[in-house]
Amino acid sequence: MQPYKRTQRLNILLREEIADIIMKKIKDPRLGFITVTDVELSSDLKIAKVFISIMDEKDTELNIDILNSAKTLIRNEISKRIRIKHIPTIEFRIDKSAEHGDRIDQLLRQIKEKE
Image 1 (cartoon, one colour):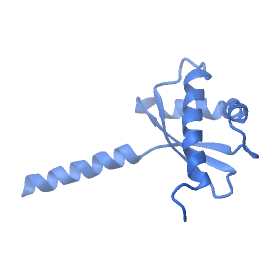
Image 2 (cartoon, one colour):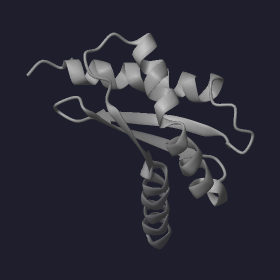
Image 3 (spheres, one colour):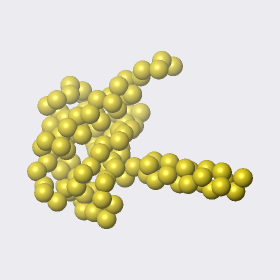
Image 4 (cartoon, helix red, strand yellow):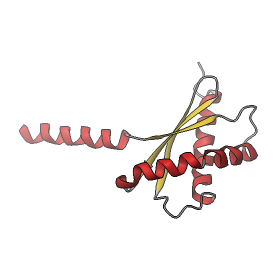
């Protein structure tokens, strides 16, 4: 397999475009500081899992609800910006990789302290 498959290129492009749309087009004042960390397209390019990181974790549910209500706006903007045959359905998910990395870091520090 080649290192740059079409899905990988679309993942990167969608991540950049969705982040830009969230930042510039969604005008909800309740929306917190959100970072789009990754996009994973399904193999048939019909579903895009958008992983987001939210600065203030107490407003996670509210931010997810706001983004879910803006899915059609985001899909419409994507269709204007990117020329692909089918615009994928968007699913927003919380990115747990930062928490996972912090946990591994904490465990490594504990091991080092015991030695």
